[in-house]
Amino acid sequence: MIVSIHQPAYLPWLGYLDRIAQSDTFIFLDMVQFEKNSFTNRNRIKTANGPLWLTVPVLSQGHIGKTLLDLKIDNRQDWKTRHLRSIEQNYRKAPFFAERFARFAALYDVVEDGLADFCFRQLRFWADEFALSARILRARDLAAAGSKSDLVVSLCHAVNATEYLSGPQGRSYLDEPTFARAGIKVRYHDFMPQTYPQLFGDFLPAMAALDYWMHMPEPAAFHQAHKSERENS
Image (cartoon, rainbow, N blue to C red; front, top):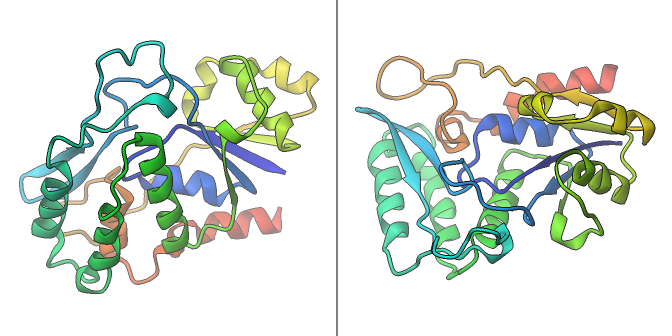
């Protein structure tokens, strides 16, 4: 069984979703520390003036030493209105804006304090929209402990993984012999974005998956080639 693990991500990019598409089980890593300036609470959309960061404000005071489960959104700021307005202004001429924007905007109707909970609800939405079939679990619900390689191995054990699909950064910290002793194969996911039609001139890779979703008739198509390769292997 192929397992992948990743921290929460606001408006995740296609590489995040592709790793899930290549997995049988995905573990939403919501019980580690928050990394400032990461993609956990922000991502980019494309505009006529280039990439625009959309950031969910968080109450950062005292967050050092706390986990993502403890991290609260700063809902004193009207960030939801700003984000939806930016998305509407920049994608209203996209082919599938009229068909899809309303159901995306509905995600912001729910009042939620926890960043991890908000990102998990968004992830379930994207999993449906991109037809991802992997089982999606939250790390908080699994009996796992440790840090770095030990934590990953512990989480893999908790779901009986035989293969761990790591992001490319895993090459710098994973202790592969530990996985080998545990009977878990390690494979690295190096996602190479393919071009697709976008508004505003030249193609920009690594935008939020929302960018692809607004332009393409079949959002699941981006990972079908990978799916076929897995089924034929």
